[in-house]
Length: 254
Image (cartoon, rainbow, N blue to C red; front, side, top):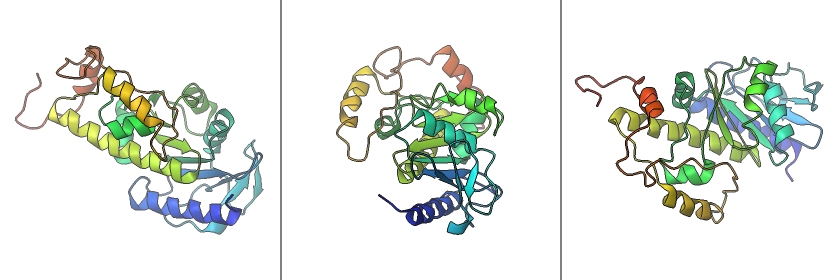
C-alpha cells in the first residue's frame, strides 16, 4: 500500500498533468485520494493545479473538516466525500473542466452514444447530471443517483468528475472522457454517427471482463433502436441536440 508521501507526490503529478493538458485553468479543479477509512487527502482551494507542492495538500475527515494542512479546504470537497460514501471501491477522484467535454455539458448533451469500442469497454456510458450549484447540496442531489452506476459524469454547465480504484485510474478516465468528447464532436460536425449495435455491445461486455486494467462495472450505453447501428435515422431528441451545434459554412443540414 502506498504511503501518504507517495499519495501526495501522485496528486501533485496528476495536478500538473491536468494543467498541462488544458483540463483546468487558473485555480479550477480538484483531486483527492482516500488514505484510509476516515481520512481524505485533497487539493486545497484557490491554488493552480500546475503549481502545487506536496506540502500544500490538506487532509480532511469524512465530514470535510480539516485534520491537517495549512491551506483551506476546497468548497467542492463535498462532491468527493459523496463519491467515497456511495462507492466504497473508489480510492481516487478527479474533477476538471476539459474543454470539449465541458462544452457538451454546457450544451446539455450526454456522451452516451456507443461510438468507440475502447470507450465502451473502459467507461460504458457517460451520463449528464442536472445542474447543481458547486459546493452546495444541490450538486450532491444531482450526482447521487448516478455515482453508483457510472465511473465518470458530465455535470451540466460545470465540468466532469471521474473516479476509480486509485488516482491513476481516475485521471485516465478523465483523459478518456475528453478524448471521446473530441471524437463525438467530430461526428456531429461531419453530420452523422454510426453507433455500435446490440450484438457488438454484447461482445464488448464480455471483452470488458478480460481486458487488463479494466475493472469498470459502469452501465453500458444503449444500442440504437434499429439494433445494428448502421444507417439508422437519428431520434428526434438526438437530431434536436445535434442541430444546436454550428453548421460548417456552405453546408446544409438534412
